[in-house]
Length: 256
Image (cartoon, rainbow, N blue to C red; front, side, top):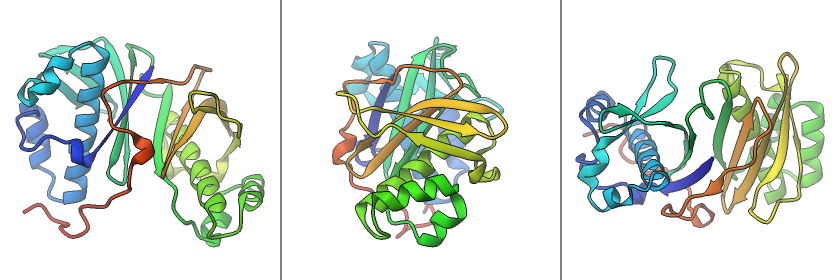
């Protein structure tokens, strides 16, 4: 697997880089937040696939990216169609606060229910939030990282939250499940490539191994059913470590 990040400022202007099917789906989105996130994820996926498959010449001509389609199966899982044919790659997409990450790998590596990925930002979390959504062991860990309002408190709470979300995506239940039904354990020593190990134990489904990394204000987590190596960074993306969280839709909630 490999990964690539893009930000809202990277998105090409206009719609020529979207396929007819992608444009049709976009037009049904009336809320700016949803439409912006849709475009952001589409561009992250197209750019990652183009780089991974050696199709970087398409990046210079946005209209040629329309042939790299990011579509969704009935259950919601994304898949790639290249010039009208299903591509022999798997992708997984996540976004948060103006940035998106795409994982791309060989076909079968990210089929629905085998891997979950989540992107979060380091932001303040209340004492009530921590008490309501984390297990006693997780709460104890957060308290050892810093007092409420500190960076240690914020990154640890959001990291655990992100890892829970990644595991619940593997379980295909999302936040419908009680977040205390899964408990996160972390390795706090990153490897030279920035990744550190994690595991998430589900009370009813076993242990999911994974990885996490912090890049500036952003936290990226992965969880999977089977042990795997962390993804390598693809060239051709933007530097997540210098990303500034944005919420561009707030001033214009509805598409004009």
